[in-house]
Length: 530
Image 1: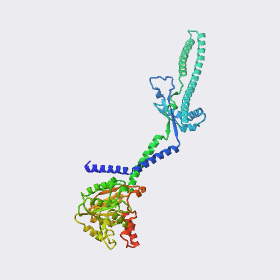
Image 2: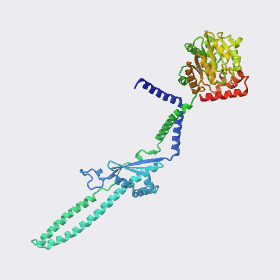
Image 3: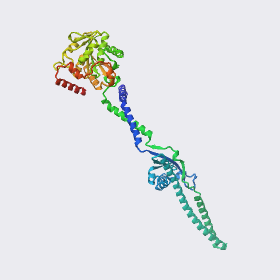
């Protein structure tokens, strides 16, 4: 396997692990549901208890210890199984159980298996309770052994009776021959004939008597119980452990399948690792959104300063940096603004342009940065001298090139000093044409994301468009997600009006309601397609 194939295999395996780790809640949920279904099945399904009795059959023969043939060779598996499952044995077992089970029920509940040439017989009996199963298995085994014994004894009795009748007849004939010998002349032919007949009768009697004695000495015991039902382990069906493990395993398998099916539809990025993977660029820092302000303070300020130093490696003086706000806040994210602020705090001349800022946003920015208005829509900060904020006074409309990047905005970007860095902040929900225009006039891109709010769809679209224009995406700054209950305690004084309302009130107040509605509809259609 060459290096390309090894890398592809590693990437494929890493993708599987990534999806499973990302959808771990779905895996756990499906596994738990599988276990609960299995537990519910155990509660609702009828339980069957199986008891087992093991028997050792005796071979009923006149030569039980013959060395010429093993005793087990005199037994037949099919015959013994048929006898054990016969209606006669079931009737006897029913009598032993005092009619607790009918013969048909006993035959249905019992299972007979033979091993070692039918010398060992295993009787299984199924019942709803352990006590009934034990009683049933022992009853079937006892009935089976007694039936074998009775049958053998009956056959022997018949054979012994026949032999006795033949012996009696021979004894009578022998008496008559003896009378002839007493009355006959020893030298006569009659005497010789009687002597020969007497010898034949005695020989036959010896054989018959030996055969009868052998039959009368046969052991007709059907067999012995090797282990009673109460001595063997009971089997429960359905088995608790196996059923639960099967349910958990089935739930896990379903969860794995569901994870790969659902993952393409789960577009919200949960953490910095997922954002970096989707963006194919590093996440410079993750900020606590509840502690952000303008200018940033505490840990947020430290993280942004680290981000600034990493960005300055790739940002050139005199260039424009497009900051995409993908946090989906009601207003421009303070993190996007603070990227420009911390850069200016390092002594670099910075121009900040936020075309989508509402009047409330600008008022807050004016207060937070102590802005002093100057000519041409530019305001300088007294707290951060190297920072100036540009606000266009003209309205973007269909007669101009773009709705957000107005003619004055383009002029401000073009006229930025050679030692000045311009930060252009646009939201990811802005019109795609405005974002593409921002990509075109910028030398690099930074994206501000928010956990569980930023989606893979918009990140993928931004990345593909940036790659198409060959504007590099340097990386991202992520904001930690906060619960809805914590949003009011975040310490951020930004208004939470909708973007469409914000833009309509601040930048396009002269438009008609029909024009604004048409733009909102177009934006939603394009964003959904992307």
